[in-house]
Length: 373
Ligand SMILES: Cc1ncc(COP(=O)(O)O)c(C=O)c1O
Image 1 (cartoon, rainbow, N blue to C red):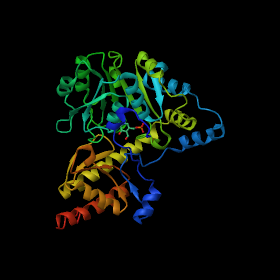
Image 2: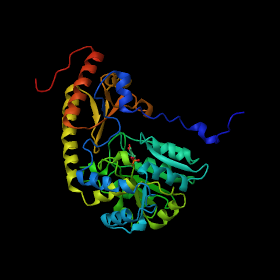
Image 3: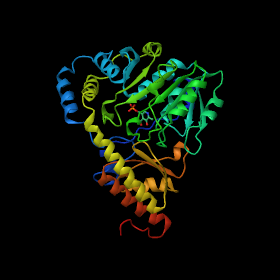
Image 4: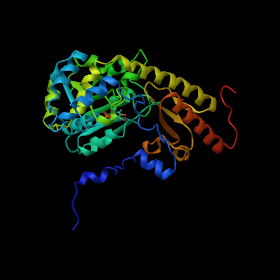
């Protein structure tokens, strides 16, 4: 007899976690493999945050504060909202999944504008919802298309600004238009995981719309700009009624003591990270110049990664992998011909470009001019 799993699992692709770097290096026979695939911050947390983490180690025998009391207070102060408008989770991924479970019924629809973060559809399907995909137009969210896709069955819309994998943000005027015209019974999740990297003045946070729109939740994370991906901590800000509903299925103690301590320390430590933004900007300009010199198209980004059209994406991905550089092949995201690369430190960006140039020469069977020579 075989176990009878939930029917909706059939519609969810297998999850295959990436291999740890040590194992990859062993398999590939390379040292110093370079991961440019998960949009992490390459700088690491500032010393004050590391000290705050180490000071909490001796209390690891105790459960964490399940209500994240101090952190919700601190975040409330930072954003000018009440602490009970804040929910903290084990990464914003946990919150995305929690929201889907709290909002969707079997057969209810969740919408994404694609290509977008693949986890969204998994959360919708995992909550027994029906996933509806609205295609992006020229890599941008189209509000008319999105509104036309809303039906009586729609309960949830998941949007990222900037979007992963395109790096394109949603302008404030588009957001305002969406919220003004949408059925207020539909919850909009605005995922601002990469918001701190944005430079465009046309983009403003969805937090500004919260007062007028109780059907909006804005998600933030400490994983990207704040360099704490390994600790797993993110948060959401919304109307208190939304937070109250989400708390019904909230997994107790899901945010660890060290994660809470690190995030709290960050609230007192904003400035050192402006360096991360500067390095990202410089890295972006360098990669733009180099990619242009190769004649490769890319989508201008407002995040810490770039979507690049390389043609034979799987071949390029595998070629880079053999040379110890891990990027993302976008073929499974229904973006054939594209890779996504995280903007890194200058030496890493240079190593990536050197290998990419070499691989492209091999594919095109012609030498490629080198910038500055
Ligand atoms: C758009 C988007 N949202 C959320 C996440 C996950 O964030 P967290 O580490 O907080 O779970 C990612 C990670 O890649 C992402 O790209």
